[in-house]
Length: 112
Length: 114
Image (tube, rainbow over all chains, first blue to last red; front, side, top):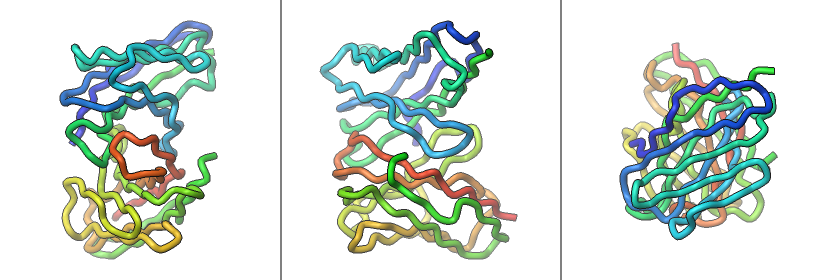
């Protein structure tokens, strides 16, 4: 079953602009992770935020987590053409002891 | 590069056939999870293997089965293939089976069932 719902489903912006993607989930979690997938290939782990954290940074990435609203956002600053990909959130722990539960993803297109 | 490899990269089968997909986990990882990803969708959890035992299973029928070997590599077997089995199959390894552990994915095997 899919727990996370990413919003928007697709996003197209100009290179250099910031991109924001949102993720909502339904059950309690231990952490939330964001992954990137290029052209239907394997997923690459970007960042993990634990349920007791509110914000985390990694390079040009900023992730926030609001457990009261069961939502997270991923901000990519100063976007580049190489950021064109699909982005997925995945929740772990909580009601699920062993698996990550995934959303349907946001397809991000960076126009040169 | 994650160090997780999958073979083959592409596969075409006909309905009713059987298929075996293979995955080598990242060095030091004892847990392998398998996912099915349909076009335009997020990954769907099939099952997880930890130290050669199935550790959890998603909502997939018994014709989806797996193995994990002493070196922690893994196989996914699908019997009696159906058209809806056409998808990208991803394996991911992790250091522990704990839910929420970071997973390291292979490049996937794209299966087409005709």
